[in-house]
Amino acid sequence: MTSEEIKINVEKALEEIRPFLESDGGNISLVSIDDDKLVKVRLEGACVGCSVNQMTLKSGVEMTIKKYAPQIEQVINIA
Image (cartoon, one colour):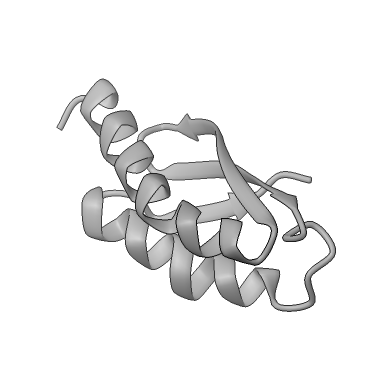
C-alpha cells in the first residue's frame, strides 16, 4: 500500500468515527502520518477536555484506523 493509499484509508476510518465524536460535541482531524506507521490526530471540541479521550483514542480510533490500514502501529493525539 502506498503512502497515498494509507492516507486515503486513514481518512476513511476517521469518516467512520467522526459521527460518534460529533454526537458528543467533538471532532477529529488528521495531522500527519509518519513513516507509514504512526498516525497523529487532533481531538477537537468536547473531546479536548473529555476524561475518556485516551480510551476513545485507543479502543475506537486506533482500532478503526488499523482495520482500514493494518500497517499502522500507533495513533497519538497531538494537543
